[in-house]
Image (tube, rainbow, N blue to C red):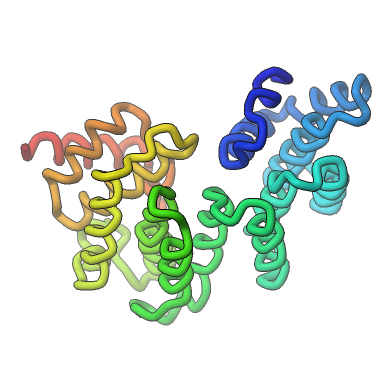
Amino acid sequence: MRSLLTATGDDWDRRGHRLVVLGEPPSSAAWARDWLLAEPDSADAAVLLACAEVRAALRGKERPESARAACLVAAGLAPRDPTPWLAQLLLARTLGTEGEVARLFDEVRVRHPEHHHAHHLMAARLAERRAGAGQDPLHEVYDFASWAAEQAPADSPLAVLPVVAHAERYRVLAAAGREPVDPLASGHWTGRRARLVMKAAFDWWLEWEGEDHPRNRLDLNYLAHAKYCEGRSAEAAALFHRIGPHATPDPWSYPDRDPHHAFQAARDAALGSV
């Protein structure tokens, strides 16, 4: 683990992805504490502990205050690293105020303006505003995603963020009873604005792909889900070919579905149509 994190260097998206994943098992916090006992000044150990405590807090197995304190210690040991702030944002996404979420997102962006995971967390939180408002093409989550995609370099996977925002808003609307729970029965992906968003993201993928990004499979799943729900089976099939068996729970679980079954059914339907 030490060599893995050392090799990651300042590839912040990859570092954040690895540490969040490494912090997920319940045993991670104890392992990180042992590491810190052996190496009290290890920033890697401190950030791993922060991620592990945040994961535990989200499972209800740790006090949020303790997780936040671990994040602040890690941030002090690694001031350039956005990952301690990402961990806090992950916690605040569920338990924090809107002001706290915005502040932590800014802390991440100061250190890495294109942080992939942080933008996804922000989109998910913004999508939950005004759940009862129904379809609103001017909703702030769409503005946020468009702004982020426009600000990012041409080869940035944030080009797919408007698709993510669309799925996150569907999740919220369906959970509130404002959209059908079957995304295929929803018109959410077939409006003019939605089609423009999906086309732009698919065209970006054709040109850039971003295969080496650590969260590439997640973006591909969002894009395949959107194309399938839009009724563009050939484009969805191309994406399913690239995804292979690497389904991600989001967005196939939206709003409350079995993600494996939903992915497999969509994949079979798309591949069977071409």
